[in-house]
Length: 176
Image (cartoon, rainbow, N blue to C red; front, top):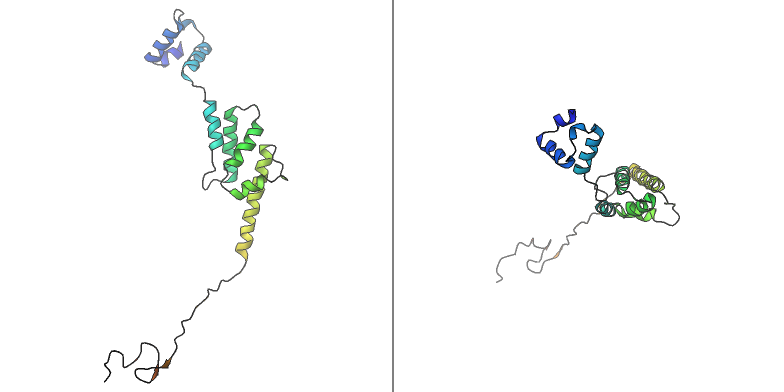
């Protein structure tokens, strides 16, 4: 009775229509909730979720851990009979790093489960970060190459003196 007082006139009218000829006032709370759930809750489109899973890509700035967490949730929503197989196929496809994808696909790596795939990806990412730190720590100074323009001096055919090109005092004068 309390539920029927709080749901509003429109929903109450729909319940009465759905329950006709039975009286909704005599029904239990659980039965009314089940009725409302069946009419208002939509089931998820599994096909669309599965297409989304196989087309999902790692976002720029998204860490490996965040990507795996998101993909694992999406795999759970897809209700596969064999989650591991489909997850192991879908997750590497969407990785942003081609190098990481190549590393994970090496035949020596055991990627039979999502957990093994994630631990390999995490260790690869940690190794890359450590490698960058090692390179950052080296004290290498890059000295840019400098090219000096060599200006030659020679004996001028106009004035007969030795000077740099275009510094001739006779430049622009007429010969007699």
